[in-house]
Length: 88
Image (cartoon, rainbow, N blue to C red):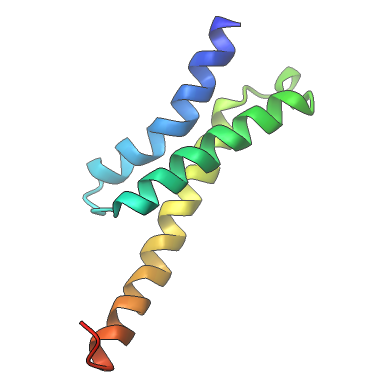
């Protein structure tokens, strides 16, 4: 139980910490979504029984990092579009 709790916590928090270390400067909404998605993926991994093959922290961290990557890709495009339209 303790190992699963630490894995879910790590899956939720590690991607946001890594994003800060990489100086991606994520927004608060991205951090919140990353934590929820990473922890949710880790919990789903555990519920479906895949944790016997691979610890649930890895898929959770990958999902959290994917949220940050998607936010960086689409977020910069949304900001550029808003600036070009004069909606700063």
